[in-house]
Structure formats: structure tokens, C-alpha cells
Image 1 (cartoon, rainbow over the protein chains, first blue to last red):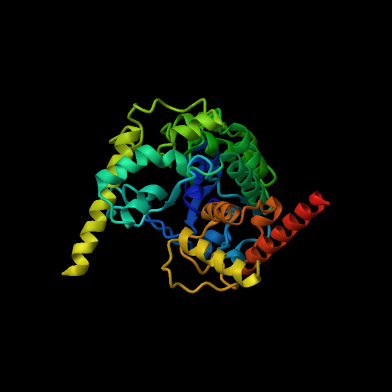
Image 2 (image 1 turned 90 degrees about the vertical axis):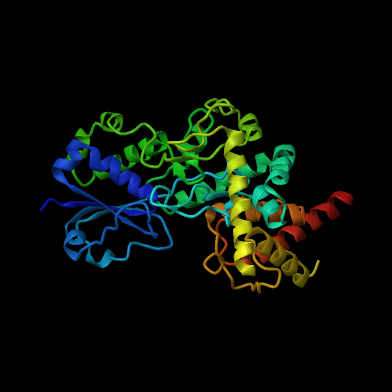
Length: 292
Length: 92
């Protein structure tokens, strides 16, 4: 039995496990395992055994209120490396939970519109039709954006505050590069560019535990994976005013079809149109259900 | 502004931000663990709403270290007091 490398955390930890598990050098010396810190509907459940935890050489633990629950079973020489969740509100300041998401399916375990938009959700809650909501979104969404410079300062403080609790940090990279590189598909789903940087920083730390990590060819490993990365199934559009304000050089043409689910990409307008139609339909179905 | 006024306005912002019912009870001891959807991402939205409502800029080194709603209310109060003192001293 090879020693284990254990990733514990949210879906980002799962994505890192995919990258590490795809590397031939790492695979030859370690079994890479991912244990979710949340109810993960998207991958098969991994039940950690005492044996696996007992052979863990490195625990990569994402900083989270829910700490790794089997810490007492780790061997004394296990290296623990903590890292932050990498997320960014800045590009989606109207983001909110979506109470009008559609029904999860096997293909879309979190629903097509898991990520809500405050303007759309507010309109639907007020009983407006899909057409009225779209009209309001198109004409007034820019007015509802917060003070973006203040928001950027708050986000920088948030990322820095979380970095303080971690061995490996990421705020510096995110804040230095989000304008020139597309680092996020959604508020909490990093692109391969962000995952590559975090992987690289974790590998640097892992060198303290094993010389194997000096031989890892991270870029070659990543080249063998789908370019969108393990978390690129869904892309939420960035508001054009946000792109203008922050001068996002990677911002795609609004009319291009690249939002929503990767297998059926939509334009910016189509995405919010479908999200609104879905929300109105979910609301109306719930309303009919409550009357019958 | 009294502590009660600050807390009542803050409670209304919390209800609005996290889409709680108008009658939902909000107490100073409540934290992100007690309110659905209150995570580090939505905390930033809450702080922006608070700053707009009270017309203040909260200390960036404090806003992500708060344990509960009571601590946020205290930070708002101390920020309002500092703003008031600055305003008075600038008039002298």
C-alpha cells in the first residue's frame, strides 16, 4: 500500500486531487484521495477508512470551520498543509443564492442556475413576470451595482484575512492577476489558471515531506487535462460594467456563446433570459402546488 | 443613534440580505452558523449593505474578524462615534 496524499475541503480540494492524481510522478509514489467537507453530489462518495488516514503522508486541508474530522488518526510524521478556499465576489457583486433554481438532475446535480442574481431573484419574489424581470435587468442592473472600488477593498481584506489562517496563501496571486487572466468560472469555481497556481504552491510545500515533488512536471500534467479544468462545467457571465470598471482584458465578446453549461453554451443575454424564465416557472409551479 | 436603533436597523439589513422573513428573530449572539446562506462571500455583501445604510466605512481589518451580529453592531456604533467626533473637530 502506497502512502496517501489526502485532500480535504470543498469541490476545489476535489479539483486539486484530480490534478495531483493525474501526475505520473505523484501517482507512482502516492495514492491521492479526496474527502469532501460538504455534501458532494457531483462525485462518488469516498468513505475514509482508518487505514487510509493512518498511511497519510500529506494532508492538504482547506481552511474551513469544519476541520478534518479524523485528525487524531493521522500518523505523527504526516505533513499538514492548509490552504484557502479560492473564490472572488468581485466579478459577481449581484450574486446570491437562487431559491428559484431548477430541479437537479444526474447531468446537472446542482441545477442549471445554482448561482442566483439579486435583481432577478428580487423581481421574481415580487411576482413580476419573466418578461418584466428581463426588462428590468437589462435597463437597471448597472444602477444596482455597488461601489466597486469599495467592494474591491473589502474583497482584498476578505482574502487576506483568510490567508492569515493558512500555510499556503493565494490572495496575492488572485488580486494581482484577475484583470489579465480569467481565474474564475463562478464566484467559487476557479479556472485551471488559478488551480495551477495553487497546485504549484502546494507542491512547493510538499517538498518538505518528499523529494518526489522536485520532479513533478505540473504544466505537462495540466496539459493532459481538459483545458476548462475539473470545475469548468458551468460559467456564469460577468456583467459588462464590471468588466469595464476593472478593465478585464480577457473578457469575452458579450455576443459569444460561452456561458452556462459547457455542453450547451449561451450568450450573456440568453443566459440571463433562461435563468429568468426558469425562476418564473419554478415560482409559478410552487404557487400552483401550494394552492392544490 | 441609540444602540437599540443601530441593532434594529442592522437586523433589518440582515433579514433583507439573507432573505429572511420580516418577523424572523435576530439576536446579537447570532452568527453565520445560525443563518442559512451567510458565508464569507455573502458577508461582503452584508458589509456593503451596512456601509450604505449607516453611511460609514467600516475598518477593513475588523470586518472579517467579527464573531456575531452583536460585534458587528458594536463596530457600527464605534465607527459612527468616530465619524461624529471627526465631524465635530472639523467644525471647531
